[in-house]
Image (cartoon, rainbow, N blue to C red; front, side, top):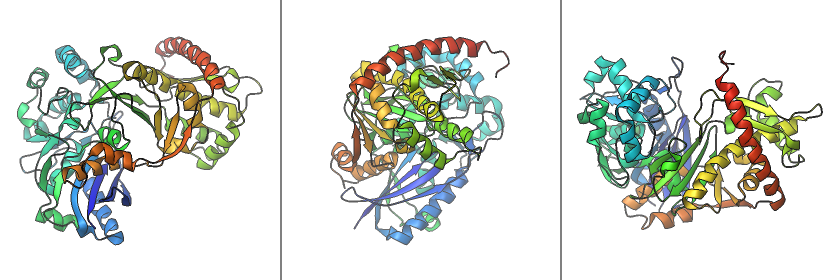
Length: 499
């Protein structure tokens, strides 16, 4: 039996998956590593921690199966990350992550220099979630380190380099730099030049399906792998997730209810109407695009509720289970209470750091179950704003749900009712890793067709159909939510004390 090894370098842990020739998942292990917050707004990881996780993960897989049967390797990785390397391949600075916000001044400067060009060619606004402002920060704030830099790569590209000695990227991660255009596997030299950066530091751009070297003898000895295994480029985590979730045709959509809620939908192309509200990205399949709604107040807000209501004063999963059960008896609409759910500022479509949480309509007899359900409804009203954009762009008739939030029993039904479409709950929680495995399998000729393989991997646990009665009520409350947001946004932005 031959195996595919997919390595998913996530923002908190690395997942290593073995998939067999029939696209069946054989084994999955996960290895955590730290994120370092040395200053306010800084989010960094040490690439050495990834290498330790890779070595440990391969060792664990070896205890379950014959790791020498791995025939091809591919990667998924957290996008918009920046790793600087010198001419010997040594890392010069910790990896700056997507959620790092240190480069706001550089964002403002890039918007002035090249913002309209980036908008025209990528459909995206200049913000800290992309690689380009991070690179400019390094150029301006760490000139000695920048001067030593031979090349920069994304996180998963560095990991692949350590296995192969080949330093390249591919077009899904390259796009997250704001320096490429849709459908092209090459850098936009005009954007790079006007940004003031050195084109020579930008690596060769490949396709996710391209072979980028093979496992060297040195890497084989270091990580416990077989020398000579072909290594495939892979893709950014959200592009892999879109493939692993079977998103292929326009309107195909998936919502992951994690700490943040990420909402993907395949779209016909860039739509200027939603500039700055959502972001646009290339799919693994060249020529296809997906849009991404980023919602910072997903599972994190739910965990917060459990913490403040628990005697433990922190995330309490036992309390979450109780609240979810109690909330099942609360009618839709939580008695007219509406929550504006922005505990960490807002993401799509506002991206307003000053936004706060507000609970409107509480009464003397309000219960904790109503408060909990209103929190879920408030998050989902915010998600509906992205849903409305996706529906207008490409038509969305159903949605695939994944992530830890689906274990909150009433939430999938709330989503179906507020969106007014069926919600399918996926059995597969590792869609990014599955996507990376499919890329490897197609590249190696093990799988003939990526779409068919993804459909074969996808298993639906349950479908939630919307209630017509609840949808009618939620349509009314959604309009009220939008009006309440306008008022609270003004109040939050005028709060000079930053409460």
